[in-house]
Length: 336
Image 1 (cartoon, rainbow, N blue to C red):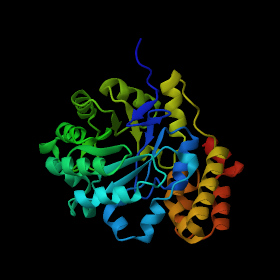
Image 2: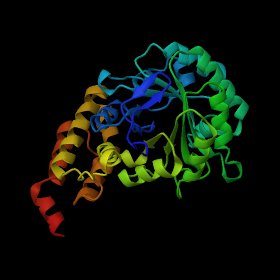
Image 3: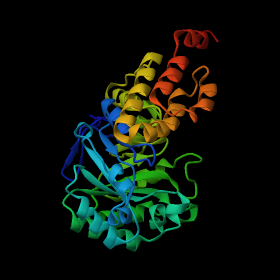
Image 4: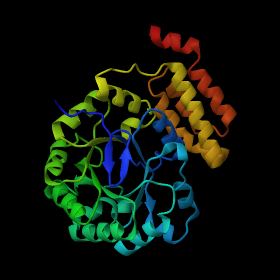
């Protein structure tokens, strides 16, 4: 009998309830959003990446990025940097915080990170990858994982070499995004490279790139043999994707898309969580991009998104959301 597609996944000594994972996304996977994804069934939540140097310098912003909640466990805290000593020492400094897995970012394509030799720039230096992972594994008791890409560019698709270096150095799992740094998020993710990594290592391999629904998650698991799927951009404004993917993997059931009332309620809850954890000023401003994602395709949402940048308070936000989701507007939307 074939293995079940939806299953528990063991990373080091941490057992995930299932193998459908929220990717760490800067500016997206903060505490309020993670709580919503957990409610919808995500098996592991990736926190926003944190600079190891910023921890060293006791940055206040970094403190907020590392906040967790007991209801969201297990979570993975992701560090980025390029100095093996700093990364490993900061990992040790924060180890007693309530997170489950320590991840090292080797996939971020953003220029200011890459130009510092961090993120996906590490893909160009297998020996440094080995040193970073080895020193970090030695420094902490928690499982250490890495998130990588296919390679830095098309000429250097060295994900297999990097994954093996990480495994040899003691990494407990590797997540592979099937695009190079050069591609950023364009084009189609290459799932073949995920399959190649899976064949080359014995630690769990998590596939990432172009998982947008239950069918694509099933295809990735079947085509690559990977142990779990990681969902990034498809979760923005769509925490329900975890409910949909887990149901489909478990029994082929297609969950209905959330109705307008549920979408409205989740947006308002998200905004309330944002203001609770970040205060109204920052919370509402950070909510603007989420609202744009949540409301894409709804009637009048384009007009409302034009106004989003002027919204400064919870009351104003509530009014705007009620307007988009009013029964009259939605009825017109269905008719049109």
